[in-house]
Structures are given as structure tokens and as C-alpha cells.
Image (cartoon, rainbow, N blue to C red; front, side, top):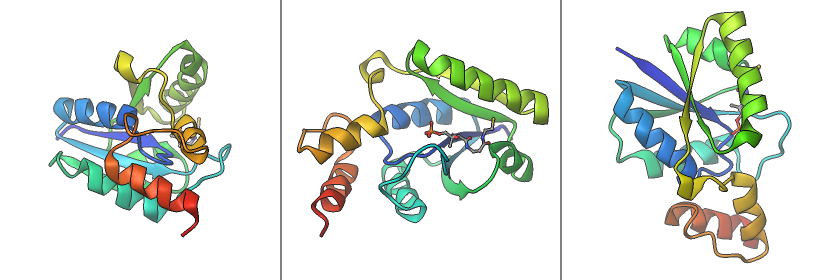
Length: 159
Ligand code: PNS
């Protein structure tokens, strides 16, 4: 069985992430969406909230599971018999950092990374941008599923 992981902070999940998850699900027997802490970012949603939100929007893909991990991604891969990390690349600005991580992960642990080109319609999309827009009352309905939009509004309104 070929298993892959789509890792990220998913704070929150966007249509850009979902596009990569959907395409990965067609290329692997099982895909685990793993919510990991990114130590360079502060989060709006807890890991438990993010897992719940992802489960809701990814339930249409029967071979996609959602999990979380705190620690190195390669250790998660080893403990769960996952051979491949799948990442989306939006633009050259993603490339330097993603290449470094992929090289560390192959060199230190023998775990492969496969990059998928993000759909052009999503190339500008990021969770940070979505949070910024939503914070100031911008319309993010074309960037995230309706349930995520509702969760953002709820969190921002503080109720
Ligand atoms: O969605 P993000 O914030 O770009 O995801 C980055 C993430 C969480 C996948 C990355 O920071 C990560 O893999 N963190 C886990 C710790 C780890 O393995 N770091 C890489 C060492 S080179």
C-alpha cells in the first residue's frame, strides 16, 4: 500500500490545500493530512479545531485520513510507514525553503518529498492571507469552504 502525507499547519485549511489533498488522493492508496505545529507561526485555531475542520471538508475523499503530530515530520513518517511527503508549490517564493526541507528529510531520514504545482487559480492563496482578509471583513468565500469561512467569522467575532 502506497501511503503519503500532506503536512502543514492548516490554520485554516484553504481550497489550495484541498486541491493538493484531492490530487494526492488519486495518486496514493492512502493520504494522511497531518497537522503539525510550525514554530515560526502563531495560530488562530487549536490543533483539535484544525483537525475537526479538515475532517469536515475532506470527508468526500474516502482514502484521506486526518491526524496530528508534534515533532519531526520524518519521525511521523517512520512510525506510520509513510514513504512520501506531498507538498504543493505555489511560486518560486516557496521553493528555497521547501527544497531545503526536502533535502534535509531525504538526507537525514530517507523520506522522499514530491512537489505538486498548485493550480494557477490558487497560486496566491495562503492561510495567512485568508486570516488577514477575514480579520478586516474581506470576502474569503472563494478561498475556503463555507464551514471554514463560518469558523473564521466565529473566531474573529470572538463569540
Ligand atoms: O503549512 P506550513 O506552515 O507551511 O507547514 C510547515 C510544516 C508544519 C509542514 C513544517 O514546519 C514541518 O514539517 N514541521 C515539523 C517539524 C519538521 O519536521 N521540520 C522540518 C525539519 S527540516
